[in-house]
Length: 344
Image 1 (cartoon, one colour):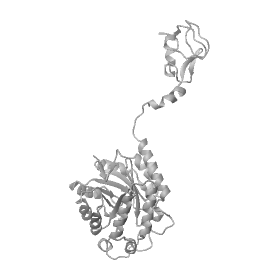
Image 2: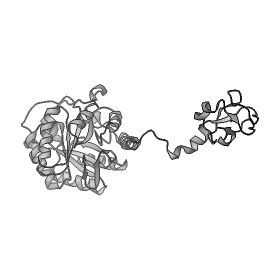
Image 3: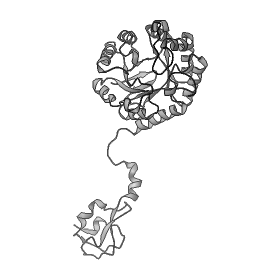
Image 4: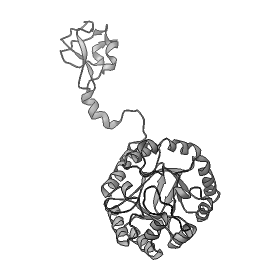
């Protein structure tokens, strides 16, 4: 089945959307800011916060590469924002004390080892590591649920990671993602969810969204996504490369409540519900006499028509079948016709 469990939370097509508040590096290395974001996410009913685990020397070599959404090198950003193992341990304990799940994305083997030592219940693998097959395999060996983002990757490269996850019987989700910051709506490409569903029917699907609103997330739920992830901050005036694409607590609450409402509205079929009966009683039309009708008189457009309410015995759908038939007994004006009045 395309579902799995993290802690006590079942995640999959038949379960409400699982919303992840991606704190990432929005704390800029500040433990206090990290705590505030956990508090603010908990206050609006979020089930899960996610950080990033950076062991910089194991993750990259010194470099001057500047990300498209920043003005300094990735080396400098991560060196400044990396939390210590002890800080992550405290953040995990604090998150769980708030009744939420703690996740973090390891960007290296050392980071994955560190998270495993902390006892995380699942792993998030970022888009940049989707085709980092040695790291994917290292994490898959833990056999804990893996949420894999797929930005910057096509089906061919995703297949290779999925094959590794399947090899170790590792439960997994695939997050459609566009690695453009921010992502214009016309680059979100929610149609990719259908492709992923067809290609990987055993995967839970989700959307890791970098657009500037909750709209793509809402649409993704209707298309089968059951994990929604967006960057999160307590304050959009804070510095940081991901702050401009982050939702605030109000938007996080809207994402949680809106995605849940859309999930509840899915499914069903075009049937008449018993709860619609009170509306049927006044909204349907029934056949009535529009003037007094004598016994033996032929029913015609001149003496019968259809009017509300819908409490009569003969509904409007039977009107044409009554024309030309005769009344068996007198019928008063505005009286609803009954089958016993009609000569069959």
